[in-house]
Amino acid sequence: MKYFSGFSLENEVTLFKDFIVDTDTTIVGFSYGAQQAIDYAYTYTKRIDRIILLSPAFFQTQKASFIRAQLRYFEANKDAYVSQFLQNVMYPSNTTIDHYLNIGTTKELESLLCYKWDKQKITTLLERGITIEVFMGEKDKIVDTNEASKFFQNTTNYIIKDAGHLLRSKHD
Image: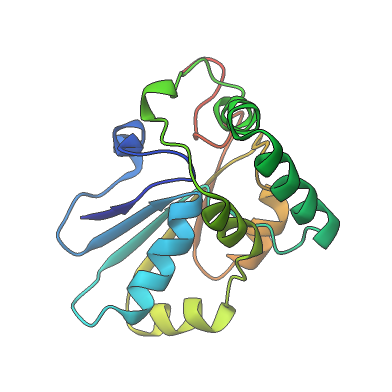
């Protein structure tokens, strides 16, 4: 399995073991890593059976002013930005993710926020016979689950009730 981490995180794959099919032909990405997983799979020439997108970062419906504000806040105080970001990632669960912290760069954040999901890439991957599974939390504070769900409508979608970006609920 090839795994891609979320923004400002590393080695958090263990948080998602219940959602992952761990085979040599599986590609998995969480949040920012979901963007990287799709791009990697699109250009990968060897066999892929499944792509698993965990809370894919989907910001293309946000206004340019939102993206500029996020980048300014990050530049002004990376520690405060990442602290607030991680609180939103963890909501509504009690799961702590501090030990997975690896503060990202401005370039990574800009890439995350400005990424344009391409329907043609998704279609091409599906036409190759690859199963694409998308897992999203109903109470995600990072991503607009409704907009993302519309975009990924041709894939296998799972909306997890009462879960946030980590795909965990308050009771997990």
